[in-house]
Image (tube, rainbow, N blue to C red; front, side, top):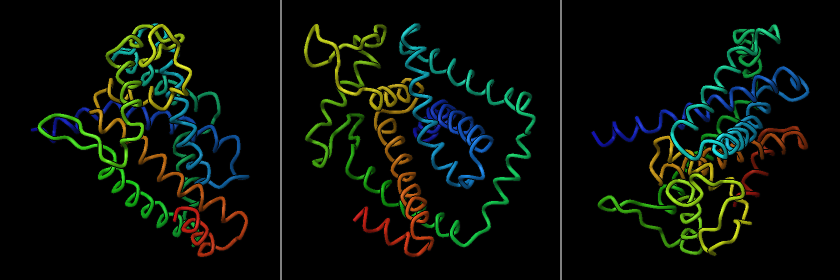
Length: 243
């Protein structure tokens, strides 16, 4: 039951991320492809899509506060735009999908899939073991995150439970009373949105970390491939950059 409840809590965060990434990918494929390949467009769309959803949520939450209704409204808005967009661009989702599939069958793209799988396994295992863990319902930091995890948890909690829940412009510092938060808060705010949408605090930290770092591995490979033009050598560049 605990596992099923945890999975159910990820439905809204997954909807938010998938809808925003899909919208950005559709626009990039329409406007930039074939200057960039479909997979390059998809990799860039992951980063831009998550950024888009974070800022859209911030704009809505400035008006309505950080709550489930705000997150749901952003999800509905992204989905409606995504559904209506083909009526204006004259390109159906089926055409978009077929163009995407036609671009997959190449040797270098098969290597990219391997890089993404390897990046996911690496960063998921690191996040799972070195970020946070739960004992008897309590969140505990791992030694590798002692340096600043308390600050980030304070910022996240200030959006979910504290003074920034209903007063977001400008956000208040959870550390210094009567001072505005000057630290770049959007990554922590996005985690707060995922937690508000149903994710646990640990899930809210892990999801953007794993997704963005896995995507970074793919982007690094695609960037190297543009320079060296050879898949295996591009992988060497990824390994040298990561290790």
